Length: 467
Image (cartoon, rainbow, N blue to C red; front, side):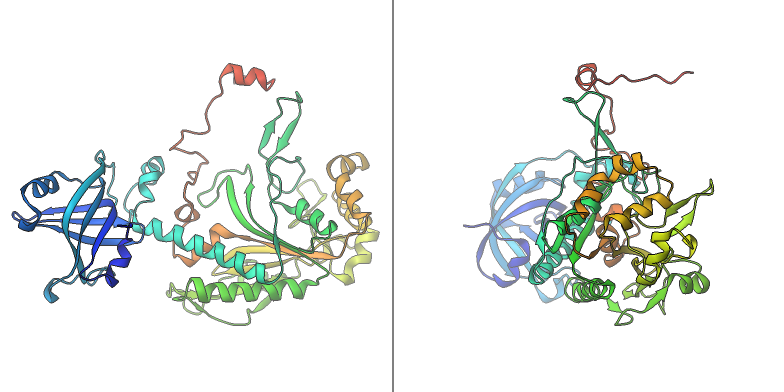
């Protein structure tokens, strides 16, 4: 017989089935042994009794939690007074005819058949391969899959191409520290892991792709914080020949449709999404990611809003200027002359648009500078000299001189969106193998030291801190 998923037994009354999974719980009632069997699709009750025979019954008594087993048996309806209304298969049970132990298990360091919220996070991270067996985590990963699949299908229908961009790239100043990778073949030189695919997606627009997206891995060597990960996932997209309204309209429709299909229990508070200027948001809510929910006690209420008209530049501590979002944004059309003449710098507004949800920023984008001279002015305002501009961004300036189309895009924080849709407190609950809040992988014991041979091959030497 072919394997049957546990959730499928509800349509197989009276049939013989083969089920595979983990023992979620075992209960010995003397003449009858009950085992709750769990696979990714759900949990069902399997029953061993006099019909099983002495050998099979004794075998069932030895079973322990988290053993991996195969059972063969008949799907039976439970008596009315024994129905378990807490699970989807609660009207049914398996009358076991055969049992095969596929693998035994040590006693787990924590309970699997609970939601895990009362278990210390460090031990959960250390044994993450056990932690993700629990139904809550399994459901989160399933939701994440559905969200990503919906995005892919939606954008495919909108004629986007999914294109992968490099992980080994060039270190350029984009707002956070880069993770760097030493080159064995080129001593003293380094690759960087991308903080985002920002430059590559713009270069794809120069390449005539016109509509690009990617479920992109991004890396930032930032100071530790509870809800921050060294590596994270974005929905990254870019479109040619568009204005701000075009990008915002596409993303608003995508978010609305995604919620309706992937999280139907959620209610979107207001459609179309309200819009606030940065100035209005700061004056009224003291934040550029306001929580507009009318009832903050309703866990299924989603209050999206757009925040627009951000300042392009802000003062640095040393009296210079830096960008507020990223240097590739274009100013609003009425401020282009100010940018080109490098005047009214603090008054220049950018085409940046952020999407906020329940007090969290879940995405941000802009229409981009697509002309070399305009992009160069941004770096000049930031105090970069000619040599630094050419060294860091010469490839972009050159590319834009070959007929770059007007273009714009956005990036969503996919981890954060799924976190909010699943009512979880932080992004680690929706990532299969996250780092801890202080950027460690306790399961793999990383980061870790390298052997001297590896260091020598990379032409690296570790300096010891002076005591």
